Image 1: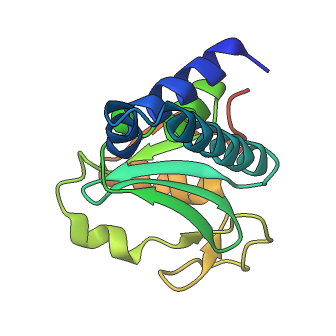
Image 2: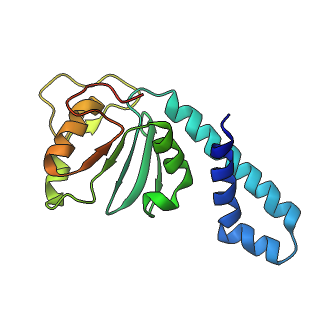
Length: 159
């Protein structure tokens, strides 16, 4: 495992307000145990995400979400810079779709859902069907979203 991943997750776990409060009260053993459990949970999400076809990170007005299995997400109401697991995944190369710059957010509702961990529905893709991540990324980019770790016009993520 890369040391920077563990350093990033450890720093995030130490910064949690509850862990800081435990340390302030002198309960360092409890704080360290909770931090280790949080890091193990984060590493589990990273492993599952990297093993799932179609997994990606999205960020927008509602916060940051990791889509890592069929029907499974990990969401935080904060921006990407405040969610260590998502930052690590994007740094590793997982696709990131940032819908913050989209002017007409109402049009985002008409985008199809992404087939994460399962096969997409047959075309045409509407707002109620599952499309491959490449089709979703292209449509989101056309609306003004920023798509990172994905080649323009490509159907495969950048390695």
